[in-house]
Image 1 (tube, rainbow, N blue to C red):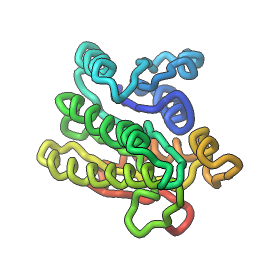
Image 2: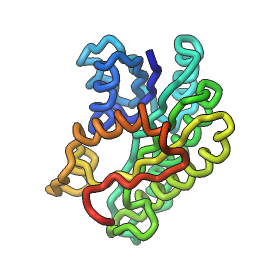
Image 3: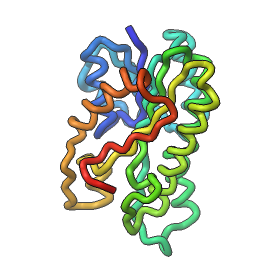
Image 4: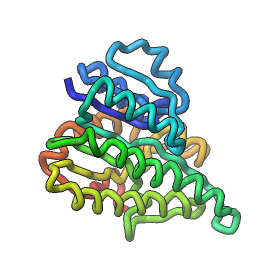
Length: 226
């Protein structure tokens, strides 16, 4: 059985992804501050850890679990994200820092700590945003979010180059709008054309097979032209 780690699993895409992997007989380590939604499903292949990804002690719980129980990670999906929708003049340095802590720094640190458990054939999938892609359509209020997602794309490219001799693949999916709770909170009333369930299906398949075809790539997953 392959071992899958997914962050941001309390709702939205991460919640759906964890279920898909578990129901298809993969071992899943699900990381989120709120573990209740998945625990309530009582799926046998899911282990949940309550973790603030910006907290080093919480990240140690992850590596301790992997070191004791798995020894190897086949797929890491960095899905957790934070979105702040504020006009630029109202964005504080603290707002920027909070967004970057989740969208960039936590991804980098968790991935760094898991490198010893990633080996030949492992696949790291970073969930980014179409808003982080150069020359894509940009939206007012998302200066912190979109710039952080752009940083994540560059990080993905660099790591793919750094670890290519280890045959660890790093790819990023730059998603368009997906109907999730986070989207609703940031843009009340907006309706995306893609559901969390549909996007989870796409990411599930890409995480398992995409590394056969891609490494260091940014794939734009959007039904509209940016």
